[in-house]
Amino acid sequence: MENLWSPWRYDYIASVGATPIACPFCVDTDTRHDAARLIVHRGRHNFIILNLYPYTLGHFMVVPYLHTSRFDSAPPEQTAEMMVLVQRGMSALRRLYRPEGFNVGMNLGHCAGAGVREHFHMHVVPRWIGDANFMTITGETRVLSEELSVTYRRLVEVF
Picture 1 (cartoon, helix red, strand yellow):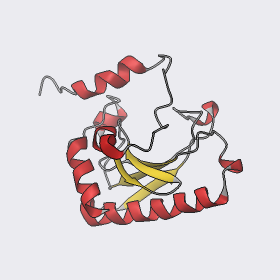
Picture 2 (cartoon, one colour):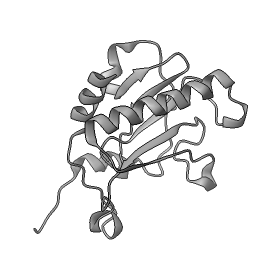
Picture 3 (cartoon, helix red, strand yellow):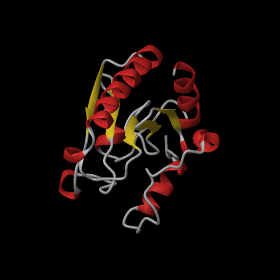
């Protein structure tokens, strides 16, 4: 193989270092655009959204509607629902993709690796043995076996 094309990654590469215009996690209550935004499910205090630049197939995030960087001062009902949505999302991924494990967590603050520092969120990354192949390790590129639109449709059907 001489070339491996991943043009969908260009938007991410071009955005690195750019000043964001608005918080990507602040969404309104209009659900008509949820598919375009990749919002899989809406709860009372949080929503589930697919990661636009996923580490693996099915990588999603649970994001509070409340715009804050401070997990430690978030309302208890918000953090409780966040954990329930993590559980529901993991169950959906187990049913659809049969992952062998998960990484679940938050990067809070710039030094901790937060890409969106001003609006905390929880990542849920399904994992399989051998999913970190040579493309990720040496080429800094991830190869996904399914388009985000297909992953979105499949998860919405489960929820």
